[in-house]
Amino acid sequence: MMKTTLMSKKQSIHKYTKLSLALGCVLAISACQPTDSASKQEALASADKSSFAALSIERSQTIEALAGVPLQQLATFDPQEIKQGGDTGITITSSESYSKPSSNLSASRKGNFFIGNAFFKQPWVIAPASTDSRDGIGALFNVAACQSCHVKDGRGHAPMTSEDDADSLLIRLAMPATTDEQRQQLQQSMIEKVAHPMYGGQLQDRAIQGVPAEARIAVQWTDKPVTFADGHIETLRQPTFKLTNPGYGAFDDELMVSPRIALPMIGLGLLDQIPEAAIKQQAVSADKSSNNISGKFNWVMDPQTGQKALGRFGWKAGQTKLITQNQSAFNEDMGLTSNIRPIESCTPLQTACLKATTGADEQGNGKPAVEVSDEVVKFVEFYTRNLAVPHRRDADSQLVLAGKKRFYDMGCQSCHTPRYQLPKTDDDHLEQHGQVIYPYTDLLLHDMGDGLADRTIAGKLPAKDLQVEFLANSYEWRTPALWGIGLAQTVDPQATFLHDGRARTLMEAVLWHSGEAASQQQKVLQLDKQGRDELQAFLKSL
Image 1 (cartoon, one colour):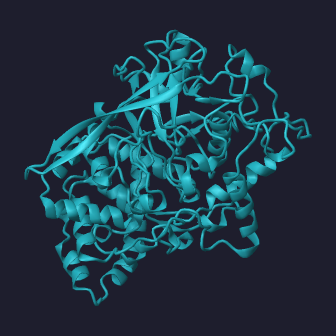
Image 2: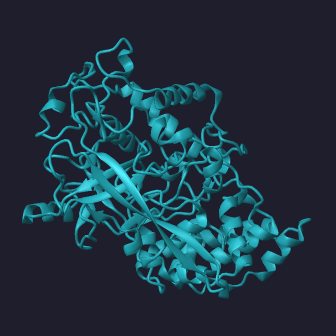
Image 3: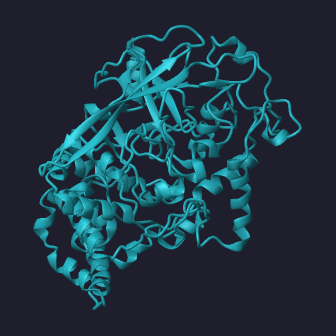
């Protein structure tokens, strides 16, 4: 990951403003060329500076600086946005929409992609086994294959009933800090969390023979009707998660429980290339916003380097880069060791887990014996870096453009930053270099209110000063990228939205927004049927 020094706010704005003016002059010409679509011209004519009153001047400047074009152009039809993943994108709109390689991937590099795909899809088995390169699952684990969580490389879903398996949902755990040393370590990002002494930092609901699983995940749903200004009622569903059949003793009442579905895999290599300074600059401008938006970046301990770095992956931005995220998932989700995570995912008190047979193989060169070799890690990292983002559909339709204008008028881009220009760096991430992308995320943490906050095992809201994943508390979530979201249920009809899968539709997901997004939520509730149709059409076009 490219290391970038954060400039002062004044220097950064000056630099990016010049870039915005230069590129804006060029791109605005192409955006204003005559077209055959009257709807495009109408949408362009309707955009004016008053549309962005929800944003502070500083936040507007930051968005324009990162995009390289004026906000007015972003809010109207932008032909370049059809390719929201830049030149890496694809046009497929089927159940395979998330599973194709970057379209600019050369033939000589596609082999690495498909080898990585094989390791991503195939299940790991209990050691010892004849399949030496894929043995060592567990002893405690959640799933046996990456694809079990990320169905067709897409997002997961919550169990529908207490009888369903939680294949694509897991539970993260954290305890409150009880000593000054723990509090100091958390404040300085020296540790991720205070793990439970028996159950650790993540619940594993499966185990190999002879080892007790930690618990079973059950969920109950409660309907929550929400009424729009015109009387339309949207019925949300609120989950209550329970951990049943504990395998290692009762849970502490103050244990903080965080259900999380699997995130989609597309575009991760592009997000990895967004400069660190660009993410930090948004935290500065968000903090000075006039609409209560105050995103912050997570500062985490990188397990590969042992140094603190900016987090950008995961529901709470607790992972710094793809290679560390992948190896953390191997370890915590599948019970597999690797060079970065060489210790089994057993707590010191889980003796049966510690005594179980492993599939670790010697790596040589003084490296520890592990189950996932560096070679496999490299292939999987290449695969996850090069899953293409599908192109937008109907981006120039009148309905979609009307919905896009509503999205901007309500200030949704306060967190969902539309566009970035990626640099060319001195690494081998060739496919991502220099791309113009439209992910609609600032990669920052935002307080989303009590409704979306995690609870304790006893069902209580934790205090906001309790950290659960480095600097993040139970109320804070990283803004997810929106690209490809309109195809989520085409890829997997069971896919759901938000961190715990409670939202069955995109409108349900929008209506759960509160906390920093309370103003946007209230604006959505004022929409009539036409407005709701327009907003949903825009989101489905992404």
